[in-house]
Amino acid sequence: MSTELVNAINQYGFPIIAAMGLAYFVYYVWKWVTTEIKPVLGQASSTLVALIDRIRMLDNDMIRLNQKINMILEFKEQYEKLTGKSFDLDLDEIEDAIAKTKRGKKSVSKK
Image 1: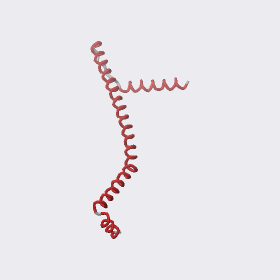
Image 2: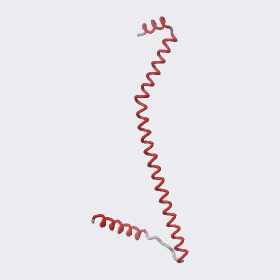
Image 3: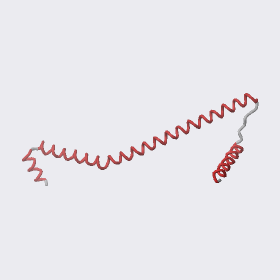
Image 4: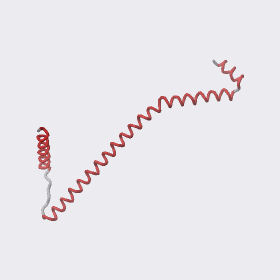
């Protein structure tokens, strides 16, 4: 192999052989990128888009929850101003009401 390379350099010159070697290297890198890297980048891009969509949905959910909490706090302030009473929220009562509502929806949907 080395004698063939020496003969080729003697016949064509070093710059021509070096240019051919560089051309092969560029072709090899281009082929590798298009066959192995490009498909992986496509998959990563689609995964990234899906994650961005999920983040936007979560952001919208957070905005809605903040609006609901602000509405409840405003309602509490108005209630306390109008009645002069403290508006205490009992977590057990709220959970019981939610459970009753869920049971009521299940029984209606079964009919």
